[in-house]
Length: 201
Image (cartoon, rainbow, N blue to C red; front, side):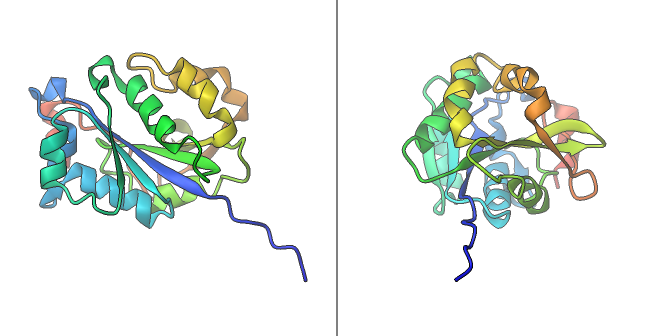
């Protein structure tokens, strides 16, 4: 019998804890897009892009998000330190995967609704081992989602401080990153300010 390569298992990690400080304190997870909260759209993008399980990290207004968004197909982690910034949420998401069978984590941000399942699937396909490091690129510029092989999680978590997330780690390992061009299937805008709300339908 020919030896068949095992397809790596890639978990989705959705960072959805932010309080929307520049949006007047409106949690980004609850912003409406096409009639549903943003957190639902992003979780679906991860699932439809081939990630599983999908872990959602909540923080600001976590109880409201759970009440209003259908996250029944996801594992939910509440980050009590969400006000410290994205780094603490990334740590919480990776911690939740510790000891799981996942070979990699694909990290998506809740405030980028222009990134859907196609971009997720492309970046996911770059996972060839537990040392994988890949990111979507938009006209050659690195963006989200980002894929971290499981062997890298401890180092990434150690450096995930404040609002940095994995930025310092990615800078230090720039040469190891596989960039996956996604500008033809996704748009990398963020919903950060009131002006950005025009992107939502």
